[in-house]
Image 1 (cartoon, rainbow, N blue to C red):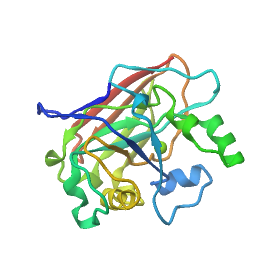
Image 2 (cartoon, helix red, strand yellow):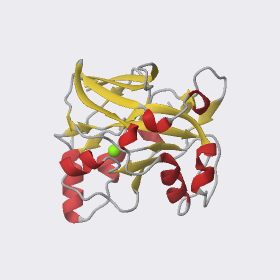
Image 3 (cartoon, helix red, strand yellow):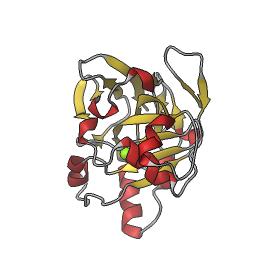
Image 4 (spheres, rainbow, N blue to C red):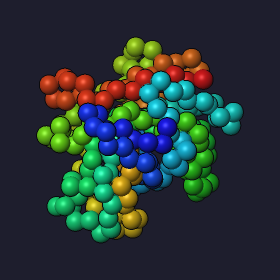
Length: 223
Ligand code: MG
């Protein structure tokens, strides 16, 4: 799946870059024993890492410790560079839910050696994505609930009100260095509760409104 679908619309976006924000919830930075960043920290995943709803995450043999990270995803409808924070929300086409699947053991080794995270974060099937709810249907993207269950048991549950950096800040910051394009997707960071997931698990992620309405949902399995 390399096309982003906007609910209730015939509009489709060919997906370009996946820009992933690290440590955007203080509780997650704490559980990773990492400092709360002073500026956004980000990395990229290739678009070949994407799978859609109903897809299967395949654990590469190099890892024995696949982790789930549930995250709000932000689809861009237009591109730009040096975007001012005050203009940034105009670039958003929609919101969804995604999983930043991470080979935690491979990442830990990379951190220790000062090597890139590309293998730990960008392997095939590491980016499950839901469809997107149009931005116009979401009055406040900083008041949404992100939730993940594994085999029906709650693992991660938080609200985007807990972001360290808001969406406008993230888009503006990254656009200073990397030109944003329509079809780019931001993964906005994961809350606390990241943990191992193993072959046979069923992962179900949802994005809900403050009143509990489901805006986007994603169900994938691990093999
Ligand atoms: Mg993440």
